[in-house]
Image 1 (cartoon, one colour):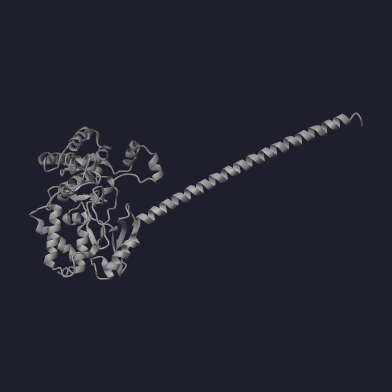
Image 2 (cartoon, one colour):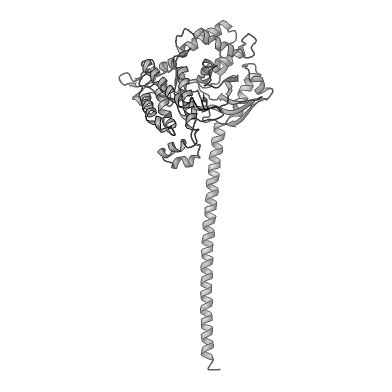
Length: 440
């Protein structure tokens, strides 16, 4: 008994130590598990919070930008009161055969939606704003005011309306020999039911549309292949043909990713998913043809003041289409607006994205002449697009011609011969490469 006493006590002692160790380990695990659980709970809460915030921001942005119902409500209210009329009014407001689809708006005052009208797919555009004003940094056209459809007034004769249209167009495109023909085109569009008479509601709609650069351009270039066809209108809401592939190039990424991607890498990524080079050459030739159409065209010259990829698209046959003509402005209207623009330096004399003039620092007024013609700005915007994937045997010559194009200065009128020579040389070089392919 005595012999086993110390051994027994030692066993009890080691058992006690073992229990202590196990208890310590279990307590440590419990603490660690509690810490891990708290960490995961915190991370879950943080993820839910950030996700909720992103959803809220996206929803707020959507509700601010996408106000198609409000636009339709305003238009249909005016139509029901007999204030406006147009080819799309009954389909939009009575028959409900003109549908708003997906919202594409990037600014609250310019509502843009995909649309469906019978068997036609298109793009619906509508103007929303409370103030009528001109902004050189945005559109050289008035925004919607409360009394937008107040002209022409009751009692205005067709002849008087014709004079109003002629005077407005003269201010936009300048004194042109073809002005009477342009007036006749506008009046034919205004006669939406083609009964040979223009009612007051039709005249009010036509007058509102006439304030918009894009609609004026659609009328001026109707019958040409590089601008979408005007399908119908009601008030200043209108629908144009839908372009299957737009924008011209570029990836659409979530805004958090945009913040972290370097500019150089972003430019490279934009060129990843583009058509084969012969098809890109055909698209670029289409852009050159569009520039020809609006330079010294039948109804004067126009300036394309946004050469970004988002302004253009192309068809399934790889024919270029202008998808956003809001910043294509008549050159005469551009000059008149610039003369009135106060400036301190050249950076104050910019319209849209691309159209710049210089600042007369003595007078603190912008000069009327654009610094570079459409062609030079188009070459600069599309240089990377066209050079990427170009055949090695024309790469050097193509790059040389593009840089010569980008170096053009002054308006196209001031250097008409050089402008035409560079444009024709580019077209010839590209056509030689693709004329024997199916892409031509």
